[in-house]
Length: 339
Image 1 (spheres, rainbow, N blue to C red):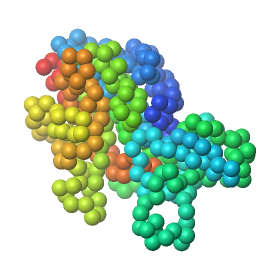
Image 2: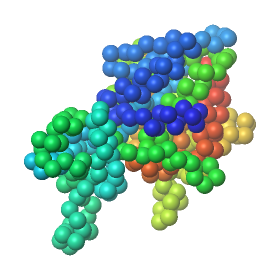
Image 3: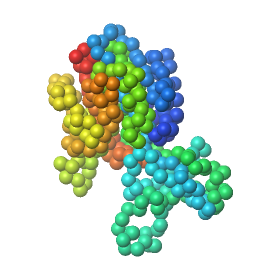
Image 4: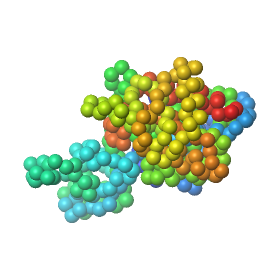
């Protein structure tokens, strides 16, 4: 699973431009299961197990990552851009990025602090005030390498540090994709459906079409979620903590989860010795918001990986938590397939 995660995080795919991720995933699915790619770009996979289950279960994870898109090329060669998905401007300035299919290197810049007035110095710059410097001296030179509409990605290595931490971009939600690929490589007890979804970061746009194709009874949404267990944040505001296991939500901004499923997840985890924790703040949202209300309604739960500095080029996660998520998803799958 970790090797899959590394390969996926080192590849690029903002919302609507998931081609590289989709190509890697479909190459891994060949000869292991049946799959189709729908018109919006979702990869819908079906893996036969040794038995036919009572219920149809769909596991899902989104392929896209947050990033940027080129909107204008200035006369001086600087590149203007806007965000694709939720990105805080405070974490962009000075970041290395790659631009377009040619993967041109660039740096996100802004007005130097010693040129800012008192008000400007106290506030984070707006994305509209930032630019990307690719070393071009003119618009004519920049246009040899970059075009309006090109994708822009955080440039970030995949590194291990500490006893069990990894740093990379796009852990949200390449982790979920990696977990599903691991399961597809295994001999399954029951038939299962897997949905690798597009455009979650810009409004959960791939989830609806996937549900209408698969028509599941139950769905487990695999995600990464904010871990604010950092200096200066009160415990009540931390959302979740790294090292305490898989995160299960009772409510977020797009879903009020079935309370019986929420409580049952903790009962199963306790019985099997799986580290688990609740998401303690009602914040964010994911594909569950679309999945649970599609077709005739779908029993849905979200299992999330605690991720520090999410939606940045330096996401941090714990390999122990990854294993807890995997163990919980396996246990919940057995529960729902024959509920």
